[in-house]
Amino acid sequence: MPDDAMGSSFAITFVDLVKEPDIRVRSRAGWDLGQSADGAALVITIPGGGQAHRLEDYVPAYDAANARLASGAPLAELRDMVLQEGGARHAAGWLVMLQWLCRAGGLEFPLVDETGERAVIVPQWSSFVPALASHLPLAGCPLDRFACIRRAGGTWVVESPLCGARVTLTDLGAFDAPLVRRALAAAGFLETGPPENDSRQLALAQWEFHDLLFHTHHRMGWHRDPAGGIFPFIGEIDPLPARRQPWPGDSIELPRAPDDFGWESFASVLDRRRSERYYDENHPVALKDLGTLLDRVARIRSSRVISIGNPQERSVAFEVTQRPYPSGGASYELEIYPVVDRCAGLEPGVYHYDASGHALVRLTGRTPDAERLIADAAWATGGQAAPQIVLVIAARFARVMWKYKSIGYGVILRNVGALYQTFYLAATDLGLSPCGIGSGDSALFARITGLDPVIEGSVGEFILGGRPRSDGIPTP
Image (cartoon, rainbow, N blue to C red; front, side, top):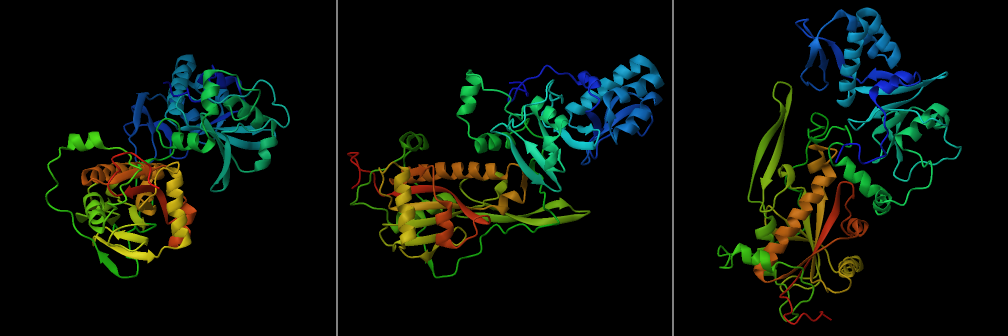
């Protein structure tokens, strides 16, 4: 799929900017179009320590335009500077290089009217070229339902997963400027007419705003934000330890899993795996079952400390652990809180699983909130299951977000999915009834535990029952 397929397509080329004097062209901070160290080539220097890209032989005709690019000017003015110094051939070549710089993310486009700079267009897709709508949108023309406005530092940012650029404003009053509204309309930020009833609009009708924004922010090609394991907080914030601080209270030592895993093949377990919602009430979950399951799925096997950063400047010790299920970056931010309704050998209540000591700590008894959490889990199965244990999966968010930029929450959700499947396979092998569920009440979990939900909050729930009913009849 071409990288401009997410939003509206405009037949606009970079050269068309020559006709738009109100759209200035300016290099972004850290980007430089200049002369190589040996003086032989024109190069683009990319911020963040990136290597310089040699473009072509250096000629002095580029100097004046390159210098002016840092402060910004209309494209026609920049082109004419090269034209006067080096002729048509070099002017055409310089425009080609400037277009390459635009596709690489090195340009931004201030909108300047008679009162001064009103906004700045910052391309996010490599194919995006700014333009102005031919007509001023009607007064009251609203933003598209996928567009949003947010603060970023000292500016306002207008963005949409369907638009190939962001627009930054220092003053919200700039929305009323005709130049800004024409640019917003051309980029697709405004609802300029009724949607067409085509396959694209039918697809968009089924997307919710937050889902599409989340999707595009977690995939490459739709934004130019720093992304990945870049450790953005080194030197500012200390990383969380790999092991969660223990909860106060007496520990309940859990039985370990036996060394003999049985004779059933992995292929057979994988084939038998399914969501079981009906239980044999004569064989509920026992403490031995819970201990074996948690041992096989989530117990910390080992740990080590790695050094993050540049040893010449400052390095930070970051502890990672090894556990049976995979976790992005070995962060292992997930914590397991068994909420017990019925378990042979264990009192009802809310517990935390200590993955290091392989033990449980009881947080509360069977309170009304704990009962409501179990009832919510039953509701999530359409009332089919009567959960004996709900394994609430919580995340210590900073374990991931200290390392990953832009994709942190997406990494956490992927880790939850990996943990779900590991629970499924281990429970199936043990003859228990596993069932992952798709919704849960994070506010209720915060109230039960007293945890700040932006520091540690629930991100998944998994139901566990005893032996499945062989007749498939729902549990009363």
